[in-house]
Image (cartoon, rainbow, N blue to C red; front, side, top):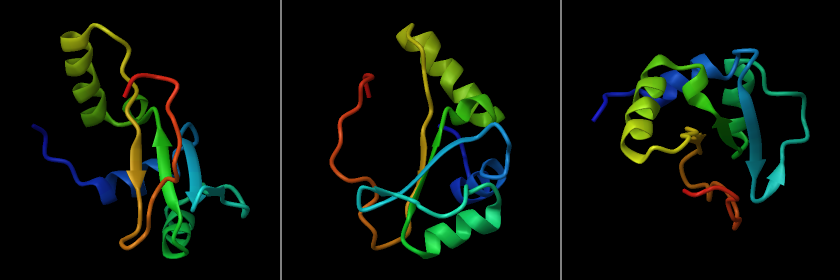
Amino acid sequence: MIEWNAAKSCAELVPHPETDILVTRAGKPWEGAAVSSAAMGEHALSEGYTLCLRHAERLHPELAELAAKFLADFLAPIDVLVYCTPAEQPGCSWHYDAEEV
């Protein structure tokens, strides 16, 4: 088990130029400017949007370490997705994942 501050990590990852981020609410994408700063991420969250940071293991050392441990156990590629959803919001709408989850 790792100790991890998700809110702090999201604030650090959102402005990183290589962050692969989706911003959605109730199944609809964010229509504003690209969320590329912690302040913009906080604004999207305040509007009820979920931030999905894809491949977070590529940019965050602790998540990279966790992914490496899963890789060793499962012998399969590991992609870490971090979801930041405001309280009282549904997060992602119904969907399917093309990869194993």
